[in-house]
Amino acid sequence: MSPRNANLYAQIGKALANLGDVDSAQTMLATGLALSPSNVSVMLQLGSIYFDKKRYADALRLFRAAAKAQPWNSDVLYKAGLCEEKLDNLADATDLFKAAAMADTANALAFGHLGSVYYQRRLYDSSVSAYKAAAALDPENSGVYINLGISYSLIDSISQAIGSLRQAITVMDPPAIGQVYERIGALQFRRNRYAEAKESYRKALLFEPAKASSLFYEGFCCDQLGQYNQARRLYKSFLNVVKGSDDKERIQFVETRLKILGRR
Image (cartoon, rainbow, N blue to C red; front, side, top):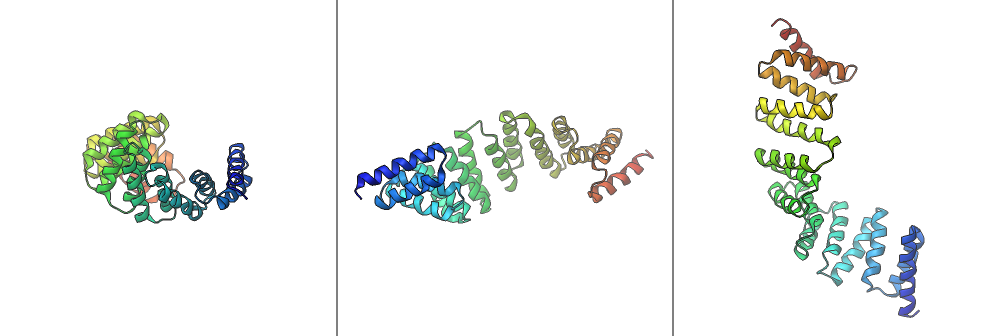
């Protein structure tokens, strides 16, 4: 067949993909690519179909070929990096996400995934740098701030971690805010900053009033601060929430503390 026929297969494949007939689109695109192996747009369309089908090795082969043809194309490099990440080839994924970020310094997704692979490789300082770049490019993305906060906490930069998590709260949907306040409380609790942790857990409970862990730790903070009436109330609420659960260690602790506090 002539190259014109190859283009026709490619056009039909793209049309079928737009109509949602993915299997037929795959056949048409694969045929078009066989007839015209250097067609980058077909590589990308077919590669995306393979990726959505979780055929990451097949998708990678096509995205790698496209990246070789267009080494300046940040999106292509990013997609190849996604495949390497899915295949758990983290060093190769790192190289591709870095290349994608260098090719387009406004590619927030590339920086975000670069932060992720650094995190998975336990290179937390590098993870912080990548997530900071992603946050600067996409300041409304609460997930990036949360990941940045976690990375900061792992290099013992607790103040920066809390700052990032608080920034996440300003841009996230209310249903998830309680979890972030609880995470902030946990960081403060680790440093024995009980008054600050108590306040964070209190805010977490405003969004999730029956969250057992927040009830327990706010109660524990009150206990440590000598605020025994509040501690008793929170401990009792905790026991009501966990009734019938297998959280035996904390239940036993709370029951013991309530007996002691009852004598105060």
